Image (tube, rainbow, N blue to C red):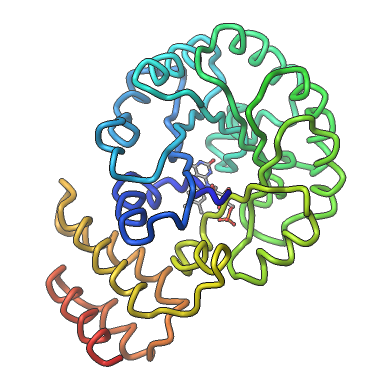
Length: 310
Ligand SMILES: Cc1cc2nc3c(=O)[nH]c(=O)nc-3n(C[C@H](O)[C@H](O)[C@H](O)COP(=O)(O)O)c2cc1C
């Protein structure tokens, strides 16, 4: 199974919907960018509920809502509300590396504190109506932190544990630590999902070969660098500039309908283009022409000009 990774600001509903419509079946499911229980503030988390409202997600990729937070009472409340609107699985984010998050023992900031993880699971598991899965890193400061967490995670019924084999301190730098991942994977009694640095078909093949028991892979940035990547993995799909540009056009169309200021729409358009253009066999001049467009109409026109030239 191929799962779209949650990426705040990038893989919200608008993206998931357009992706699913352009490449049906390429991805099997997705995890939503986190709903944050900042200071246990349920109202704040609920403000972002639009992203996972089932009616709006009907013609989109299936999605598993993700919660970031360590307040057990509010966690149960939010998760059970999500269950009431139709979600049978909730994902707990204990991997976020942002300093303002980790400083409060949230995200990967909780990983050095196994007792806190146990006491949260002790409280929430008997009270949760949906099932729980976890997305985590190897640790906050050291990759060995995960070894103290494994026996705790094994004590509870979890649907899966997704591991991005870096520490929180590493953020996104350096290499993924496949040696530690290799040691930890057989110790977990839960289904393990691999996540991290799968950006090309050969990355996928290398990791798949090394971990033949892993059946599920979560991919984030690789899909933004190359939207065809899941199809390459599943069907050895060849390059298809036409399909990728049509996806970009559809994405820009959806961005132009977002209820935000035009300036923000242009910023978003450019943000996606900066990621996606990396994989495209186009000239620097063509790429820059799209980047320097001043209006949504100009962007679309310049993309059409590339399409017409192939
Ligand atoms: C801009 C950005 C936003 C992210 N937001 C989230 C998030 O909301 N929840 C989460 O669990 N991980 C988040 N992540 C981490 C990704 O889900 C993923 O674990 C990480 O990018 C490694 O996978 P990749 O190498 O396939 O991108 C984010 C990553 C990026 C780059």
